[in-house]
Length: 269
Image (cartoon, rainbow, N blue to C red):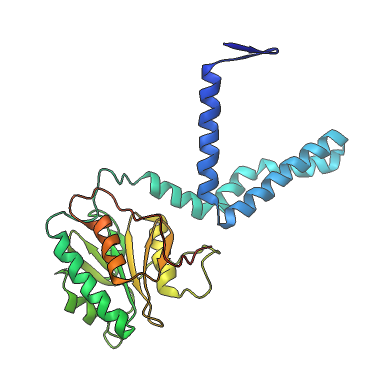
């Protein structure tokens, strides 16, 4: 113990402060850039206002504010429902113990996707391709059109042709197989997504916010290639850059998805 005035301050107290600081830091990172940060500031303002009112002795205002704080726990769950759901998803996924795809044949699968994306980018054919872990997104697969087909460049290009029944929606790839097409993904509600982003890009961000997935998007308007992971969208990738990111995320021997901190033309502010 280290005497600090009239307070005994020990190693356990230092560790406790560090843990609290870490929790607050990650809590801030979790809600940063979302509606939750404004709501949290609002709740903090009410708490501080109630403390001031209590000191000044305004009993009626104190009663009203205390009543608001008493239902604050329920309000937090209602207001932060999307963020809480995202946190629970993240806690339930152990990326170090599960892979997106089986290692066997992943390189050939990547080349097939790269070839399809190159062609669709040149022809400005919109596409949305989701790479999922072997046990995830079954609810989306169930409501899509099940295929269970080998990943093939011609098949991907055919699926996303504008006049085909399956072009609208996402293709989901698991274990080096196209398991479903025409899958509709949740749209991100992040207010910081650039207004120029279309539905495909918002869906890519939305599915990556709550699931451990890697998403490739081709813009129908510009042909620009984008990737999304963990709620972050990177746009304007070259074919070579896309190959690098896919190999890093999906290549043989990779235990978890991740891509470099360098992001081309980041659209999330």
